[in-house]
Length: 85
Image (cartoon, rainbow, N blue to C red; front, side, top):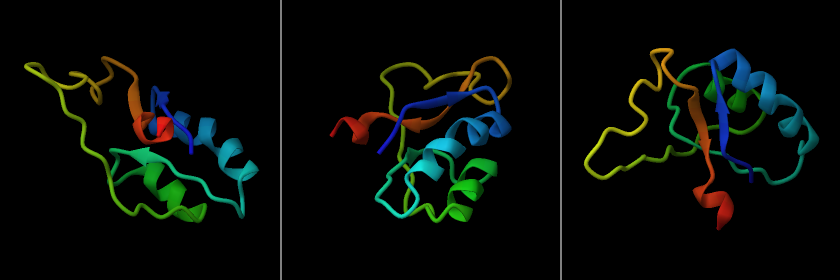
């Protein structure tokens, strides 16, 4: 399990996670993500980690990471909640 993973773009998240995924080839690895489509889940599927389900981010009285995809902030690709177990 690993997370959180935060990056500026889809290309960056693949570059950052590729070595970790490769180091765990053939063993259990869990990544909790909100991403349903795009370069990151495609990379995970090609690496033998198909998206089984996605997680939902919740917040109280304000938007969750407003500006997440418009270049205003880094993007949270993988969460830490399940990794903390």
